[in-house]
Every structure is written in structure tokens, then in C-alpha cells.
Amino acid sequence: MLSQIQSLEEIQQQLLKNYKMNWHDTIISIQKSDIYKDLVLDTFISSDLNLNIKRYSESQEFKEIKKIISKIYSGRKIKILDVGAGNGISSIALAKEGHYITALEPDNSDLVGSQAIRFGANINKVKIEIIAIITDLVTAAKDTAIVTSAADKGAYKRSTIFPCIFEIIKEEDE
Image 1 (cartoon, rainbow, N blue to C red):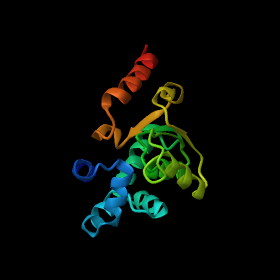
Image 2 (cartoon, one colour):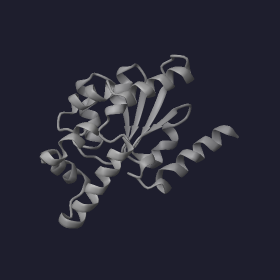
Image 3 (cartoon, rainbow, N blue to C red):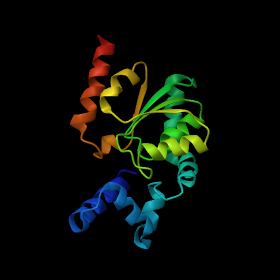
Image 4 (spheres, helix red, strand yellow):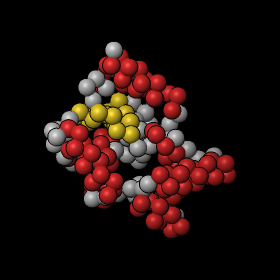
């Protein structure tokens, strides 16, 4: 998965350089291109959000996440903060498992951001709290497991998100 995200970032940088596209436009361009058909499927960014959620829910990555959560929390349903939630596939998949999800996604896009999460949560009949402003993280993260996919791979500046998380963890330990 990391190599696919790096590929997406490289494609975005090239498109930004040549065409001055934003992330939303980059994803649309990739979705329309036959060249990137496998990449679109492998990174769960097709235009069919429900298909992305279904495929992600059946993925090895998601099975491993469920196994880790089950082992650490003895099968209990827990509060999870999904940092850099993107289109919400992991948030929605975890909510469908019965967990209580807060999705941190500052992008408001209906394709790769918080609007996609709202849409996916509604059609899958799951409740997800969506936080678009990083400063609201402090309130949301108390007694919460933090799951991140995009944020730890450079999609967001670590200096913006992680000091907040480390401060929360530090406060809880004191």
C-alpha cells in the first residue's frame, strides 16, 4: 500500500508541475486514465465509493487492522480516530464492525475528503464524527485508539498533525 501511495504522490507532483492540478482534480484525471486502472483499484479510489468500501473491507490490510484491534482490545468495540481519513473507506469499514469512529479529514472534497465520508457513512447507515479542523483533535482523541494511513505516509505535514497527537498522549501519561 505504501508503494501505491508513493506512486499517487509522484503522479500528483507530475500533474501539478505540468497542469497545476489540485488533489481532487488529480484523482479525477487518474480515474479516467486507462494507464492507472490498476493503481485506482489498488488504492481504493475508484469513482464508486461503495465498491471501494467493499473491496477495502475484504483486503488483507483491513483484516490485519481487525486482528490487531481484536488482540489489543480483546474484541471490544472501541473509539478510533482515523487521521487523514481521505474518502473514508477505513472509517466506514471500522464503523460497520461496530467501532465508534472519528475521522480527521481537513479536505472537504466529495471525492477524496470529508464529503465523501459523509456520503459513504449515510449510504452504509453508520455514524462517523468528522473533524475537518485539526485543533478539534484534542477533544476527540481522549481514550481513543489512533489509526492513520495517509497521514504517516506524508500526505499531510507531520509537523501539523503529530505534535497535537503527541501532546494528547503526553497529557494522558502524566
